[in-house]
Amino acid sequence: MCFITIIYKFLLVLIFVVDTWPVFQSPMKVTSYFPFSYQWPVVMGQHVVIMTIVCTYQLVPCTKGCSEEIRRGSLERHLTETCPKRIVNCEYCKRKGAHKLIRSKNHLDECPDLPITCGECNQAMPRHLHNETCPKAMISCVGCNIVLKREDLEKHNEESMKEHLDIAMKKIDALQHSHKVFMLPDYTKKKEEGEDWCSPHFYTSPGGYKMLLRVRPNGDGSCKGTHVSCFIYLKAGVYDDRLEWPFQGEVTIELLNQLEDKNHWEDTLLFDESTDVDCKQRDSTDGWGKPNFISLSALEYDATKNFQYLKDDSLYFRVNVKATSIRQSQFKPWLVTSVDI
Ligand SMILES: [Zn+2]
Ligand SMILES: [Zn+2]
Ligand SMILES: [Zn+2]
Ligand SMILES: [Zn+2]
Image (tube, rainbow, N blue to C red; front, side, top):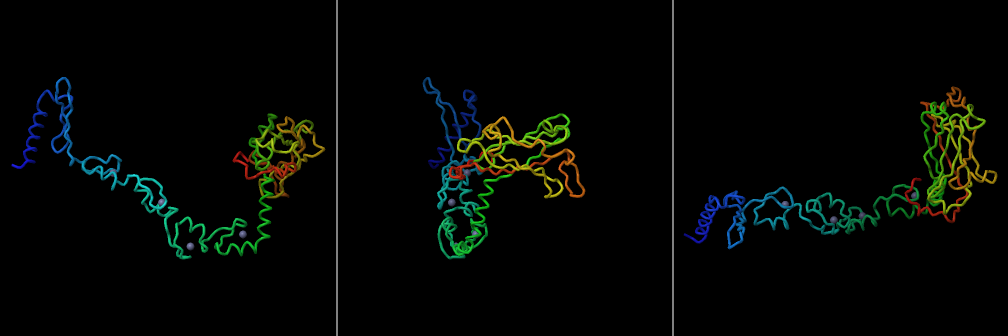
């Protein structure tokens, strides 16, 4: 009988004893037979020592949860060498992640440091460097958004200088004069109950003045019952400290034709020397506006000019602000944060 066989037989006898001897039945009942693992208590003086035999051939679930079952003796190797859930670094970009993800096609398709050879320019280099330099890559011109090859950009810039300048001017213009559209709902109820309506607060431009539009559907003061009245209020805004006060400029209020994009009703409020100074200050309690903005009878459908301002019991207002008091030298558009603009 070879040595291993003797050991094996000895273990079987031992297990039999452990498993059947009432002293060991509870709470350390042996639950399985060789070749699994066993635990049993051994009384040594006043102490009870738990003895354990662990079988390295027992199949156990992967401790990283990859759903594989591995022989206990190979678990260590599985976790470091083959488990799809083991953490590895991408050999190119050094990003850390589960092997399954890092070595996947998805990651390789976007790994910025993967060396590639461009079929267009024949250069071999990491992807991100190539993306930034390939003369054959299609890029869009920041001046006019046209898509062209990188190598053609210089020529395009020379030829389109005037066009680029015009577009830049328009963008600056749009930054300084923003317009907002607001819907006033339930017009009839508001009119009958003499209720006011206020638009949400808005900024005149990124980094500009904060305002709101207040509408009285049944008219204000002497215009009560005959007109819709509109007022602009300056509210406390986050940029107030770096703006010029009192506010100066033009605010155009339009009541939109809901049938087509023409024949909108409009009126312009001037905030200038003639304007009551209280209406031009920050967080003013006084509004500046037109009590006789539009007569109630003009709201209804007009067949000859095809306009209708009151439709589905709603009015649409568009407010355009041209601030002339912003100190241009102090205006820093790149510092404007994403506060409601
Ligand atoms: Zn695994
Ligand atoms: Zn990578
Ligand atoms: Zn290339
Ligand atoms: Zn361009």
